[in-house]
Length: 228
Image (cartoon, rainbow, N blue to C red; front, side, top):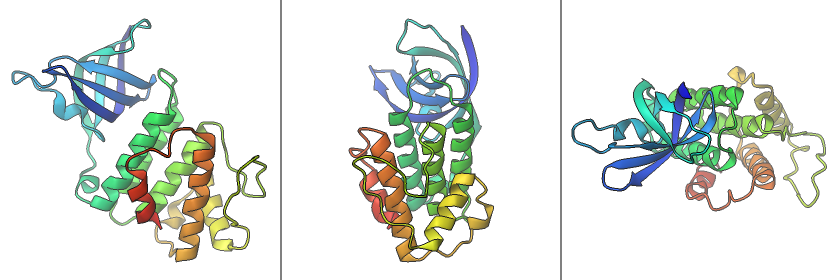
């Protein structure tokens, strides 16, 4: 079956002398693993299209019995130049991609979450918006879209001790707004160091509770320091 879909490249690496393998989050089929034959060929190089953070349109032949799908055509769909030029923003963006790659199952469509990921990257690309807000919004959307909608009032999660946000009204308001998806009023919100720490620790505690193997994400230690 020939699939034509937009996608975001989550991860890529070399395969052999001229080919590449790319893990992508596609709108139609969710996470897909692609092989790009001749990607590094001098005659028709495709490797620039399959760098992490690339937003592309792809056409590939989907076969159920294959772990790697073969790409036949690719074009750029959009760019996030401001992210690439800013160390803080690109650190957050790469962590978003790495988390997404680890938590999604192959060929399991999540069109709403795909749309949310694009919005998060657009927010990170906007220099007028606090990148912490964009990252927290991503974490809330990840939990909600994959079936773990947080409950701010005393969540009953065995074995998990969450940071106490009940005594910090700002944390509750910001988290409730993030979970609602209506975050326009948060773009210029002044966030205290205490509130910042509470929200960051609260969301990351929930994510590592519900999703395994995230503690070994290479970029997360750097990002945790940036968010503190």
